[in-house]
Length: 262
Length: 323
Image 1: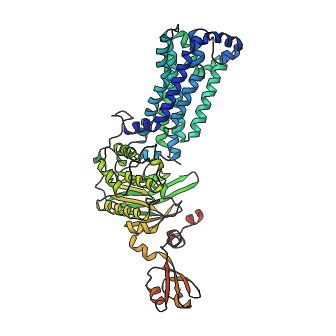
Image 2: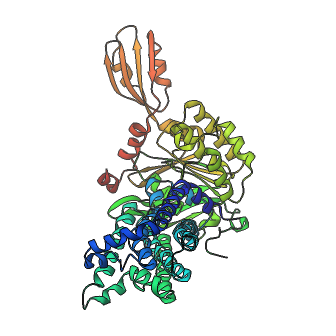
């Protein structure tokens, strides 16, 4: 039997979890199933956009299956969607209940501060992982079904990157929330960091002599390796996971050391 | 044990043999420059009902939150049921029932599922305990807690605090929002808990409720403990305002000489004064006239009782500076 607090956390987040799951599933399903109809239009769209814009949006080409998936699911809207979900859900683990006062009664149960923090992040993190894995699951079904000519292993590698990216930013969001107890700080700092590192990855690739800055961006470890063309990159994925684990652990330690609700 | 598994603190490691349920030594908390509580020395004996009195902002909630390890002391320390609030938090909170002053429940549960969560999180509380308490407080468990009135939310808070029959109940303003009938029921619950050997530490800014329930009271003002007294001696000290309407005009001098009577103001047949201690001399003196009406307010803690300590023996430079 799972700890009462984990189940309570899932129950309290239930409607929001269902909303995000439906949204991510609809987004993935609709975009991929439009693949065949989109082919003609893609040519026009690609011709209409300047190359610099295409590079910035992370769109190599929209005609090949890999290019299409990259452009629709993995370059901008997909990560944006799952990261928004991650940041808002993680803000609910500590920062929000601390601000509205609901955390006191959860903390007044027989468990240590660290156990409380781990249980909260385990509950939210597992739900989040399931939501971030929805594109993965759907693509494994839809790609063969509509006959997209791309290896499932490569699609899986990119999808796994999306999950790893979510873990990385969920860890950062948790660290901010656990350290400050402020929901606003979680949303602005983590959201700002996501936007900034996205830009760093996008622009860093376009400027000569600045390619190295991409190494500072989690997005580089997620999509900079071009998994849809090159397959699995375990070291890069592991980097994201370790970043998430390290920030989460740091968050638990800081939460254990500070005053609550001041 | 995995870190996210609940700590199943063994009941045996709670030191129940000690006579002291709660001990604060030089307990001090500053929020930056602002003082929460300073140099608090306090001892609550096991099985005792201790009232914790003071005006809003005096440091009552800060003290309570230090005892529960929500806050960490700037200086000094607290020992609760023989345990350290931080190091032994898991084992300790199994033995504590806590009612927050600003009650806010997590989630949008119905009262029943919320209380089932608390019952389970505390290692399995018999559900009959919950239903008994709910019945006693006339609380409908099928309603969503979010939509409840303040009084009903307070009842849910009381049920979760009492449900696991903790050795120590820490209650922050427990009667706020309760109607008079439920306040009486609450006081009965406190008496029952006390008979059962549970220790109760309850804060309040209302003297009357503490007088009915507590054995002793600790009084805080501006973050400092000004007195710890037995409740019996409180009533004698309490200053109350009295207003007597006579049939005919009376002379102020007749009343101002009485022991304990001060601030005498007479306008025609109406006498207003304050009285410190027993009412008897005033009643005897008034009885010599035709009395139409007599009003005597409950002693107001904020204005009379605390000001006695504040302006009297208990006042120090620090408390004056902080006022």
